[in-house]
Amino acid sequence: MKRRMLALALASGLLWLAACGPAVTTGPGPASAASAAAPARAPTPGPKPQASSLPATALDRALVPLAGPAPDYAKAAQALTALTRDPEAPPEAWVHLGVVLGRLGEREPALEAFDRAAKAKPKWAAPLVAAADLARRAHDLKRARALAEQAVKAEPAAPLAHVALAAALRDARDLDGAAKALSAALTLDPRSAPALAGLGLVFLARGDAAAALVVLDRGLAMHAEHADLRATKGLALRARGEVAGAAAEYVRALKADPRHAAAHLALGEIAVANLDYASAEAHFRVALAVQPRDLDAQLGLARARYGLKDMKGAGE
Image (cartoon, rainbow, N blue to C red; front, top):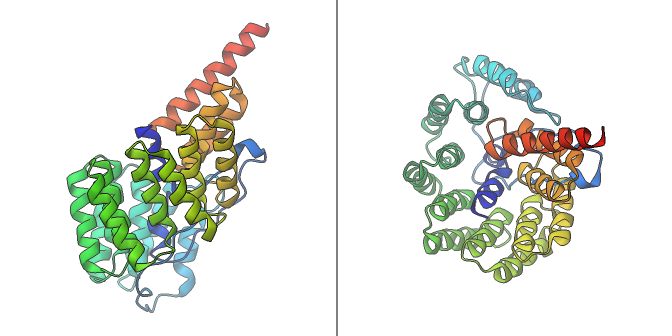
């Protein structure tokens, strides 16, 4: 359960990316209903990025390799690196570069990119939120908390800064502190879907799936097709043993975001349990395309392929 909660916390993938500039267009996901689930983009916190003399389309062009079901992070990194050589490159370009480098496993260069963005725009939480998430994914929880606290200090009115702090505290098992940070986020924005999804995860970490479902249903009443809320509800239903209901929630999550890695991972696991290795392989392949360094996706794909090979051998 703990690893699945971590995967869900990461599933937004480019959650912080949504907070820092142009959205990345995603292509269609797998055709089967059994292979659908991913989180919607988070609300943009804080002020708009500062104006730049750089043509508005330059960043958009650099982000093109990230479009579609199989983002090309290496090509995007090359384009963004070239873009950030321009002294007039906007801070968003550095944040996007950090996100992409993080996906490629280049942790320190990614953190340096986030630092450049934070220095260029000190009152902006997004680069610090991104850096905190990267540190948390690397299990450097002390650093993650420090960066999230800096984000809150830089932009106290940004709900996502408080959500990032809550995530770091939750992973460190400071559930009371996480709940307090999420309360701050919800005070700033009572409709914040990321905060409500985070609160659901806190209740799940406490072993209270019923309370989690109450919070998640509250969020879904306002954001019916928000992928993170749907995927978190799927997690809560799985915790109660309601696998069919959970699968339905993951499918709805994928309809909102076909690249939601946690939903694909969960549906892959369910497919493996049902001996449907072909569907499992498809889900794990998408999850791995979105998060190339994800160990759960790597192991899941290997397990599905082994199952396919074993079934083929048995049929011969």
